[in-house]
Length: 153
Image 1 (cartoon, rainbow, N blue to C red):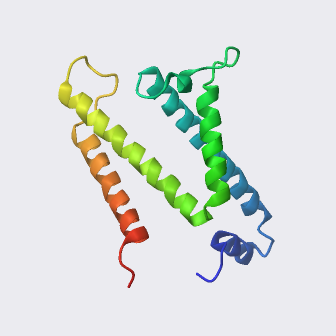
Image 2 (cartoon, helix red, strand yellow):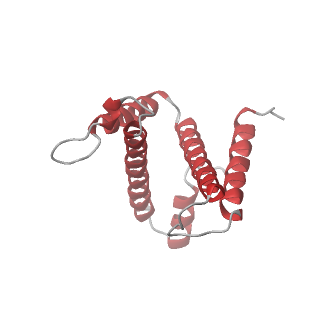
Image 3 (cartoon, rainbow, N blue to C red):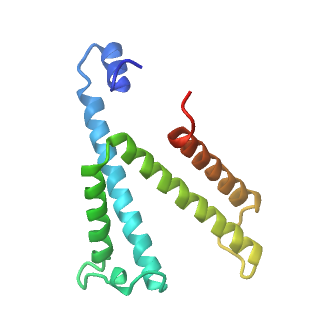
């Protein structure tokens, strides 16, 4: 609890070497996580735009690469703004909150699709799976919100 890098300290104590390997793995992992967030967020904006739920500008794609350039630019600007203005802990909590919210909505959507019935889906799961997934995400969101904004003891 007394260190800012517990995994690096554990590695150093276990091997007797500087935690260069753990540091490099951490850098690659964080970079990969950021790239995944960029791709996921821009594709969500693109998809919502194509369905008419967001302005058509966010649905524009680059003619050569066929990627949603405007949506990716918007996400990049938002991430850079948040990264420069927010403390790291707040940024991590915000990312976690948004990810859990998206997972909750995906599970809720699956439950709605299953309830509606219709064509046989390619992947069939019991109704309990999306319901429990939705409730689990809500519980984690509630816990995270309580930890962030609840009364201090």
